[in-house]
Amino acid sequence: MNTEINPLDGLNEEKLQEIRDNASKLSEMQQEVPVEEVFTDAFVQRHTGFPSIGELLKSAGYQGTTDEDFDRFIQHSSISRFMAEHTPFDNWQAFQDQAVTAYITRLLGL
Image: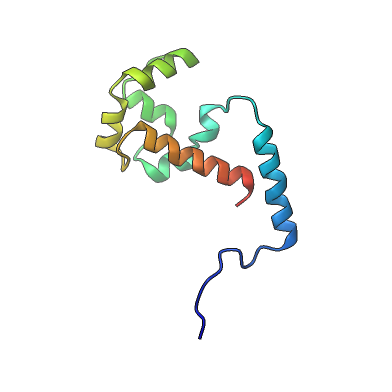
């Protein structure tokens, strides 16, 4: 008896075409994505004890208002230590990587 499960089972040609189309759109994106679209409330709530990315960052000490402030905070603060202490992630990069993976998965329609 063959009990292997094929992860592509259940994907019909229409769904595969939708994934192809979404992948094409994704590859053409040349703009920055707003933080709230990558770190959705649902994602943050599922992976942390915080209701939103704003609340998580506020608790981590972020007080900025611009993209530059945010970039500096992420690069030069103790955010990674905060993430390790208050989330299941070892650091900010691991959290961001997981959020980006979830974002791309949503865009592809998977």
